[in-house]
Amino acid sequence: MSGSGYVVPSRPGSYFSMPSPHESLASLASRFRDSHGWEAIALELTCRPSGAFELVVFRHTLEPEGRREDGWTLTIDPDFRPSEPGAVDSAEPSELPPAGDPAEAVERLRAILRKHAERSSTEPQMPAPVTEEQLAAAELRLGQALPADLRALYLEADGDGGSEALDGYCWLSLDSALDAHDEYIGVPTWFGWQLGWNQVVFDADPPNTVRRSSGHPGWLPFATWFDGNYFAVDLTPSTNGRPGQVIEVGRDFNHGPRYVASSVTAWLGQALGQPDPHAAQQSPNGSRQLVVSALDERLAPGVQAIHLNDAPSPVDLSPLSATTQLRRLHLNRCATTDLSPVAALPIEDLTVGLAADADLTPLTGHPNLTSLAVASETPIDLTPLRTLPALRSLDLSRCATTDLALLADLPGLHYLALSATQWTALIAASRLPAHLAAARMAGAPPLTAALDLLAALGVDTSTAYHLSGTVAEPQAATS
Image 1 (cartoon, rainbow, N blue to C red):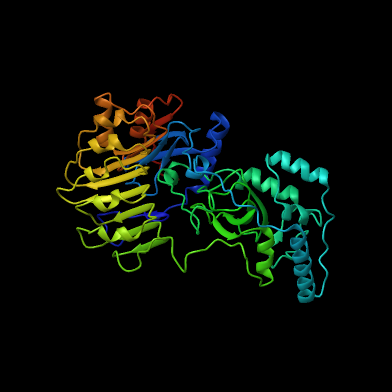
Image 2 (image 1 turned 45 degrees about the horizontal axis):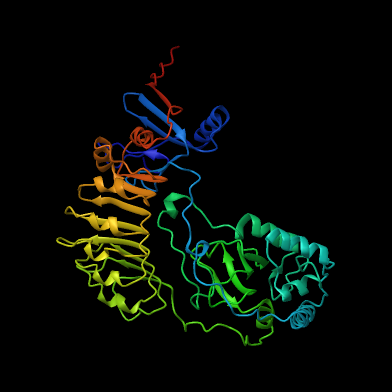
């Protein structure tokens, strides 16, 4: 298939167009939604030149990866969600006092509104303020008190009525803020196992000011630019943060929030060009993520993710000692002979190619490693995996077939990616891991093979729909 047509190998240069199948597929999906109650489906239709066809349909528990050769992602426990560091952070809570000033916040709000009126030649029509009873009900709903300065602002007006008077941002009404909290900001972001199996949440800058979460019940959004991102007050900061500090969260911050100001008062001051006397010290011009082809002078303590692409192999990883906060390391289309430099780093997500004679021994006992993907053309000893207390996700689909039996002894393993051949060997040995919430069958296996694996992993696949037959050749018209 190519676009909306097909080619015939025996006829070079030929291209035959065909009708787009999308309308028919959408109709088919609707039929299964109505008849089976499946909101979404996975479908595989195989057609042969003879007219023979096979159709297999199942619910969205099975998802094809981006390319056919990448295989299928299988969801075994749809309710399982990987935890994020900020949700289970055992660090001591912040002992710093709030930095907001209610009276100053109100004065700064009024100054910003005057500037807006001067620029637009119109006075913004501010909504009536909320009542103390409404604030008390909001705090009961949140389970925490609002910062005193934000409270004072809501006693001035219930948001800006959509006028975007706060330096171009919309100040949300109290009800809108609570709704955005409950539906979006107050819960971790989850895009499914295809994207989430090796999710990493980065630390804010400065470190340990904000919890490492993609969403948290202690964050209340109060302003937005209608771009899917929000400014929020942080009611449960990390060790070095202040209660009521302002952070930026939302669509573009799934890898972690951005520290903005020590308080709403300071945030308003930024719009007026006033410094934040309580601001935490941030790193100068540092990048959290690097996409590079060599480990060079850009390495610095503030770097938290490195994607090393197409570097000459074997790669010497010793320069990584400069990246003391590194959480993610991906070696793409290159390999290393020595993982020792990784042992001293707080890496949580590692994708690595191993050159001949390299092994996993340097990773023994690594306390932070959560997701690991290994590529190797020679068999490797998996014994060090037993010593990784945080290991949750594992991808061995690009490893030469090796003894995989010990995978069944890893109680914390919730995601496993293997080739079809490797899965077959595990099933034959009756050594499937018992606590998987999701899996991937790599390669280009048919949907029926993915269904067989899903059944072996304990999921009922009896409702899968199978249809086969032959399309009759149309009869020629006769006069």
